Image 1 (tube, rainbow, N blue to C red):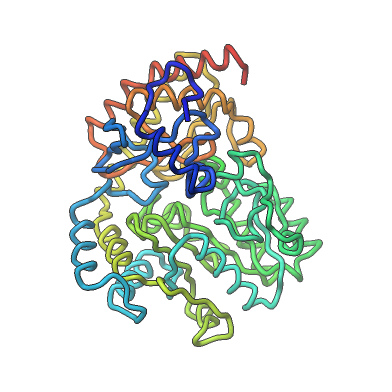
Image 2 (image 1 turned 30 degrees about the vertical axis):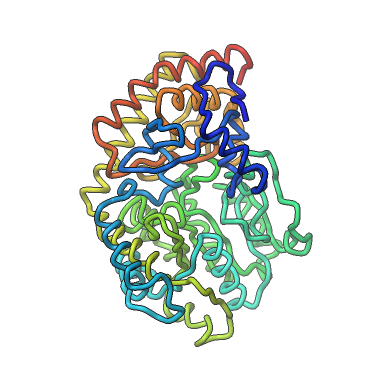
Length: 447
């Protein structure tokens, strides 16, 4: 597929692979945002990755600011993780029985997040949120769930409403194939709006099993909770006998050793009832989890009546990767992430300011994103003010210069422990031209 941006560096090997993929894979990709539809052009097919860099099928090297959408907190092919994976794989790929690795990973998670006493391992963030939701409904005997517009919790039927991320990228508020009966059980509210939540519970509180929220949303761009919002959600849910599910699939073990909870918690109103985790805890392999107090987790089979199972849950290779990753995430690593993210974001802000480009930078720990619009962004409606054409121009200028951003204006940027001075300098050197490209887009098209 030729580039939609004339003059941009061609990628013939990636283009050939994309053409092959489109013949056998819907849209040519296995996750929609990878298709570059919101930025145009040819998706880069990556042949290998090392440290802070991606190398595409054409042999070009890019500083990676995607990080596999968060898991690669240590960088690609980290030696300690690679060694753990090789040792685990040599002992067998999958057993279908319990193994020590899954116990060790569960112990590591429980040790990091104080309110979590037990976890159940699964294979994806979608599985984790789906299972946490089923558990909440089983515990409360209620059917309805509250979510917030712009928060993404995986492609669970009941939660694919105003879901941000890929859905926001394509401008689809819902998804075909979701039964009306499933959508009818979901109440969608504006994020950071306490009054709307109070009104929903006043009207329907006796039927609401749970409120699920990204601990600090990163799927409409980074939109952290306003001060007091999480406390209010906890207070309101507790008053009505509903559970609070904190989705830390993205922020978990990324924002801090204990995720977003480690930055914002503990809360005076009490901890969330259930947490979901993914991404970092798998170290790049398919692993995720949901957990909470032992008394709530006891509702799960085989101890309780709520059924959940998975053939590859607790896979020995995936859990080895996750355990090695978490164990290597030292305080020094988290300090480095903060330093590198600040250096890149501040440089981007400075260049965009010089070029006269309206922009807002928002944070969740070391996660950040740039909205091409003025003013703070507190909810999905505000996030949608960002200029998609300006982001596309910015994205492609950086891509041409060897820097790979997320191919969507509605995503967080991620750095890693492997992003050293050389990697940061390459990003900073590419920013002036990218800022000018964004400015030209505004001049041509407008916000």
